[in-house]
Length: 401
Image (cartoon, rainbow, N blue to C red; front, side, top):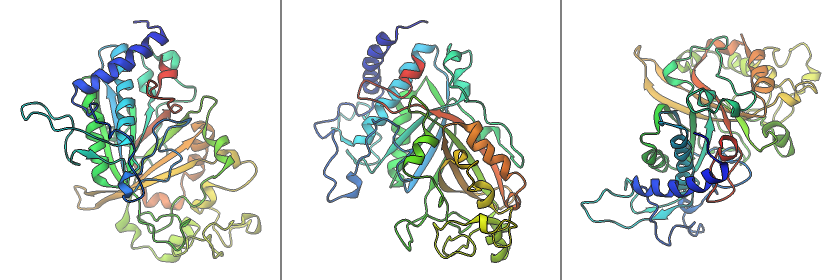
C-alpha cells in the first residue's frame, strides 16, 4: 500500500493516540502529565525523549537496563508504521512521567499499577533501533534500508544462540530503578499487541559508583573498569552520527566464564587486559585515564602486544577513526544446565559505520588471550535513526515513510 508521507504522518499521529487509549495505556493522564520538581526526589528527574539524537545513546548508562528485541507480525505496512508511531508516543509519555485516575473496577486499568498511580520519570530512556530483517520483502521497505546495515555475522570464537540474537526492532530501556524498567517494558509492549512479538530479552545493570573519583569507570564482572577510553567531546560527532543524525548500534551478549577467570593469577589477568585491576591505570601507570604510551613500549615489554586495550585501541593516527562509543551493562541469568554461573556483559557499541569501526576492531581482537574466558552468545546489528522533533514525530518516520 503506497502512502503519501505527510498523509501518513498526520494519520499515524491520530491513530497512535487512539491506539494508546484503546490499549489501556495511560494517555488520559491528568494535568500532572509533565516533569515534576526534581529538587526533592531523584525519581522525578526526566530525560527528554525528543532531540536531535535519540535519548539513551550519549546519556550515562542507567543503573538498570533491559534489552527487548521484537519481530514484526503486522499484517501490512500501514499497521507496522502505525505500531512504530505508537511505540514512540508511549516511550515519550513514559519519559515525562504522569499520573492517572482510577477507573470503575469493571474497566481494564489504564496502567499495570505496579508503580502506583503516579509514574515518576526516573531518568527513563528508550532507544529504538531497527534490524536488517525489518527491510525484507514483507513491508516493501527494502529500498529504505540504511547503507551498511546487515545481519550480524558470526565472528571467530562466537557461539551465537539464534534465540538470543537479531530481530526487527531493538528497544534499549534504561532507568535508575529496576521497577521503573520493568514497568516501562510492560507499558511499551501493551499497545503493540498484534503488531510485534518479543524475540528475546535480557536484563542488565551497572556497577555502583565506588570511586575513587566521579570520573572513575564502573567495574565489570571480571573486576576491571570498563569503558575508560571512550571518545568524548567533538570526537563523538565524527565517530557516531551519519548525515541524518542516526547511528549504528551493535549489541553483543558476552558470557564471561567467571569461575574459570577466578582461578587465574592477578598478574596474568592484568596482562590480558593491559590495565591494573585496582586503579584501572595502564600497566606501568598510576592513573586510570593516563595515556598508555605504546610508542614508548613498541615491543610490549610493559603492556603485552596482545593485551585487550592495545588491540582494541592501538592509539595510532590510522586507527583514530575506528573508535566506537562503548556503553555496557553487566548481566546475571542464574546458572546453566551444568551448574555454571551464567554471567557476563551486555556490550553496546555506537558507531557511524559498523564495517569501518566495530568490525575492524573485532578482527584485531580475534584470538586474543581473553577469548578463553569469554563467549559471545547473542545480540545483533541495528540502526538507531535520528531523534524525534516533537509530539507528532516518531522514531523512523523520516526513514520509513
